[in-house]
Image (cartoon, rainbow, N blue to C red; front, side, top):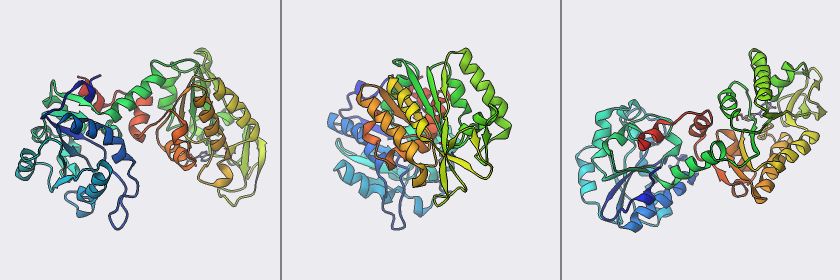
Length: 395
Ligand code: AMP
């Protein structure tokens, strides 16, 4: 795997695909700048080598040129984070850009306009990719968040840099952390899968059955398993067309010697609301009119015990409706147990969809080994796909 560490960028122009798709408020101010901060080490290494940087990104989902989605709005933030005045050009291809790139000196940073102002970007258009490729001596992909898309700037462009393409430090860290879980993992390996539905996690479960020793199942999908096993789940979330599949998963896990840990009790509520009445019940004996919205105290103890034994931990999805304070306790206790295991030397990766939101909300970010920056991209990697943006750099 080639990264920017394998190159000396002195007098080189690095064309970096970053993911600066950050949220903006009504006054066009950046409200959450993690993605910009995550790309800083890559940019700084190139500048410190004596190179110059051309940044390309998308912002939002514009239909053609849309003022609201102009990347000019974020130039101030990138400037602030890098501590260098970032230049901006109001297009991403064409003469204006050619001139701006030509005039760019070592140590300078130029940001191009939103790539998605051209339909060719998402269409993966080869000639658009070729036009972009002219702006750099080296292509650097540091946009993990879009690595699962075969777009012009994330994938197609790489063919124009047969020897001069590499990953940025963020991409490399994402790839290494997932490899630590799925390939070079220290055993026992534990995957914790929560979230709403079995159907959205089935690809992950099937892929990881060959790679892990334990799976903790929590969240809404618990109840499809419990019902399939003959339990009473009241009005809990269930996918009746996945009952058979749930049994198949349990059987496959048994054959592969993977231990599946299901909740034994639940916090049940009489409606889907933080103001609902709630109490504790056995997970397979939930009365009609009540629904399981969090794991119960006995389950917390059991899950914490399993987590404490693990040397490698993957966490995807909350084990309860963590957005409602009364049903967040299970997810918080789970996070604490993962934090403790990490302190004791386990490697923990949190990624994919909502678990990252939960980790941030409860301040676990610095207590786990790695928090992935790419929701969809991470999910696809967990499902075993080789992402087009990664493949294109490796080829
Ligand atoms: P996902 O995007 O699949 O990871 O699902 C995350 C969502 O699952 C969160 O919004 C949680 O509120 C929801 N969730 C977790 N546990 C439950 C549950 N027991 N019943 C309904 N929804 C749940």
